[in-house]
Image 1 (spheres, rainbow, N blue to C red):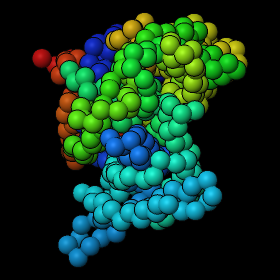
Image 2: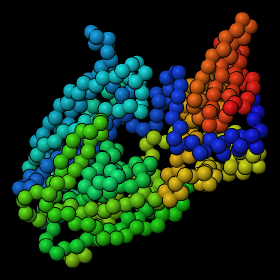
Image 3: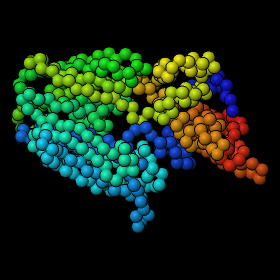
Image 4: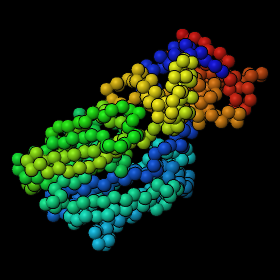
Length: 445
């Protein structure tokens, strides 16, 4: 099937209106959720001086893909898995000061959930240790993917020479100033997050103030296709005598800041940021004490963990846009090396971005997520790439149909897709087992 570029554009223009509100409706499991680029296992560790000032309070969070767990059926024929993890905290003399063994039971409603990479299990541990430097190692002991089940990091103690600890990067909750959702991405920021905050544990004297600078790390070539990053600078907010509390709410940990009765030099430096210019890449955060001119440098990453598979391979991404491009547009985007092609893809989608204030483009992400869905869900014995089939092409252009009907007669079998917003229905004839061909497109009232 070759749909003309003009017809494509007319269909797509209407489809864009519902891009961000369309939900996948299908009578079959979404096979694309079984294939995902992100790691199978993530950890975040937050440390802060205790209210008494003589120890460190820890929040240890972890996030595990269902696909990385070994599920089995219990006596009630329900799917369950046990996530067994070992976490060790060793001091500078390699003496183990804390060992945690988790045995979390995770349930799935059906087999398809047990192999999904988009469903995850989140949990946390809280504890207190002596104020000291620690080497931390976390291992998922019974994960299926052995290559992505280890995590290592270092925790520094508070001291007179080290009065500022590594920052926490947290997703903001709308209309909440002191409540946040941790990303649980090895202390990185999710690219798709519009707003986030940085909290920095500190020990400060009265009347000390701080400012910050965030700039792109030199030599980071992952940012080239997204354009220049303008340095961000400003003053930090100083929160004195605030302590973390944490709770699991609807499968997501919620971190809250509560004022304590303890009066000491403990504080949190808070930076609120709109994710308007942060593209995937590495950044430098510089905190300066404006009273003493003391500076602390940190690096952090912005990651697109849920990038569509079809967008991760440049040539395939270009080919996947053939349905919506004129021949001249396709020829232009398909010229140059992979870096130039990727930049052209990003530039093309800017005109369809529903929120142009941010670099993250919801329309582009939605389109290539549709390509992923089509690739896996509409492939046949004849065509291994479902995005090239007739049903795959229509799904990519219009999204999931509002209703699917099957029409069986003595001589033929057809499948009919209804799109009420577009006032159209698409009829596919089944030529052979699993092989669907578009027969006609009709207007509906």
